[in-house]
Amino acid sequence: MSILSKIIENKKQEVAARKIAQPIAALEMKPYFSRETHSLAKKIRQTESPGIISEFKRKSPSKGIINDWSSVEEVAHDYVKAGVSGLSILTDQDYFGGSIMDLQTVRDHQNCPVLRKDFMVDEYQIIEAKAMGADVILLIAAALSVRELTALGALAQSLDLEVLLEVHNEAELEKSLNPHIDLLGVNNRNLSTFETSVAVSKSLAALIPNDFVKVSESGIDDPNVVVDLMAYGYEGFLIGECFMKTRNPGRYCSEFIKAIKLLTDET
Image (spheres, rainbow, N blue to C red):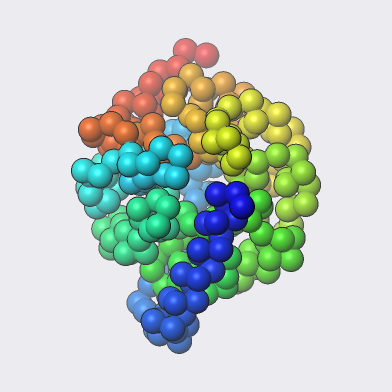
């Protein structure tokens, strides 16, 4: 069984338990459930700065502990101050060390687009994301059927949540395109080997309809890489480990964005 299959099986069990602990009716009563959401797609396209989606990430299955010293509240504050377009908050606990409360903590203190980064397998998680203050949810093509991708995307958009669809190759891209997508992310990480290569983003760029905001994910650790990918039509860049492995993620993020601006001013 692949690591993704193990994660999905574990996630289904987790969601089943969460449904009992906090039913949908209780989620729909939470204050954030009725709030007006922020558009990450518009934020990326309307800002003059590079569309950095900075991630708070404590650990990963491939790297283990990445950062166990920074608080989500402090890092989110510093990321926003650095000028990011949005925040990505991992809410998977078992494999990434996150929690749904990290998402609510960020929403309590920041007024910017927030992505719930998790393995979404059930409608319950979409409703939970809205109730905890998310603006965007992630759907992973490798983890869901075409029917599930369409149904979960439609539900998310009915709740005024945007959808970031993540693909890893051309086959996933072809099967996954549907009307219920706002941003299309290409993950440069091979889920079997965990190796990363931005060549994946480059190879798929021309196949992504311009209706969607193109986002490159994983393996982006140099401002020059961002500038290079911009030439392929990418507007958003999801970056986590590059920032989180440093002693001060927010400061490094700020320096990273400034470096991109200098590079783009030179061209």
